[in-house]
Length: 344
Image (cartoon, rainbow, N blue to C red; front, side, top):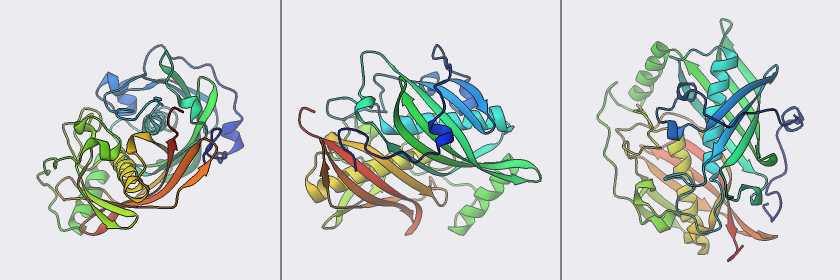
């Protein structure tokens, strides 16, 4: 459990952890197309270099402030854990293109992501943007007719040379035609036509219920109690949000689901244990994406908070959460939140 030192013991293979910090550049971003971003402001990866077979490293710059990532938490400011997940997402996308021959036109489908913060103090926002190095290893390759159709990655993240987190992520790669067949089949399974009209965003819950200040960054609506330690809410999807929807999508993005998991977990911990959401920090997220979230169907988020544990300077709370449409799970997650003591 988290304490004032490393919240989680290392789990990433030694072949990733023991790599020397490579010579990485932080002076400009790589091509935004390599990380599937439109806005330069949403492109965080600054460099990518090969290290060995199935090993590569990326650099990224962590902004001191951002309109979405890290917005809303009480002082002291920490770099947002979901910003680290976004950096890993961009790193593995760039690596798939650069070193594994995935064409630019292919569709990337997220199957799972996880992150465990190993040093919360090292993620404190300083007087300058943070330089993040991501050492990445491919741990599983799926081939079809000798063409790479899926990759699983493990990574260790170092902020200014200090290990701060470990992560994992899985992607499958689809040609445009096979992706469209996959989407049409999935929509038919839930009774939807190939094309639909997306729903508009629902009214947000009060931002301070989910650790936010800006209502535009809230992804939950109409929350309710579901038991002594559980809460539920509607999923609020705003396709005009410049970070969550950097470009048009035909489904609910995985990063939006990650944000929903964080917010419903903070809300559940508050409801169960009266823990202020603004003091909570996401220190572990392990999410599996079972099917696409459809933009023209209502979605719900539910969570149950476990018993809190105090260790060192932090109190931690485990939370289990589910996102569903038509009463069927589209994604599930195991989450851990850490709460800072007043003035820490």
